[in-house]
Length: 227
Image (cartoon, rainbow, N blue to C red; front, side, top):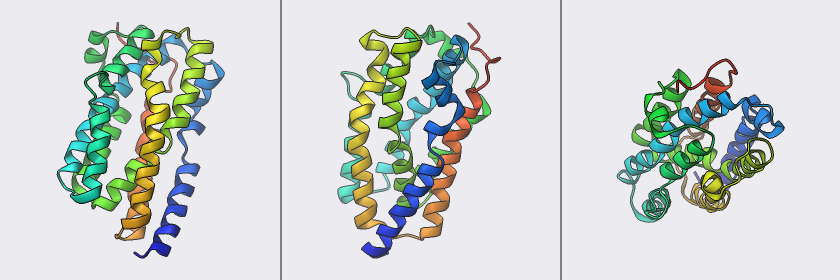
């Protein structure tokens, strides 16, 4: 695709992301309104950890399939995920601990179907789909994270009693880091995307649906982590 076509692709990607924005999901709406039960927040912390833990693995799979500037971009992203000073899965476990979910609770809590599906979908996209489709899916995910992180921090402080730095660090890191990731993915897609537009958009919708489904899995007040 030429740059004009890529500009149109980006418009369509942004429209799809806006349509299926995770901030519109009832779970995040309830989070922002202070309506989540303690049990629902704990279930989310335990379940969504699997996606957080798997994300660097998806990047490692994708980086092995790329070269040049894109490989460098992914390596930078991966280095942030695995930063020895604060690996992102560790930061998530700190958040989980702040809402009463211990290491054993995360390990022992069975993965719900929606949780399994989002991990499997991103693994498939990053491992098996054309690179352009994988980058579009990552853009669809990370482009939403800064605003989501901001609302989560506000809600945790206001409604859920999480005020210590370690309980908020995961989200505060992503408020800034994913702004850079969003810009980098978008720039690459605008300059280099050279695939079938319909297939790129279809894969993006698959990723967005999987992310939405992961929240569907935990948006049930009657489910709770087995402590």
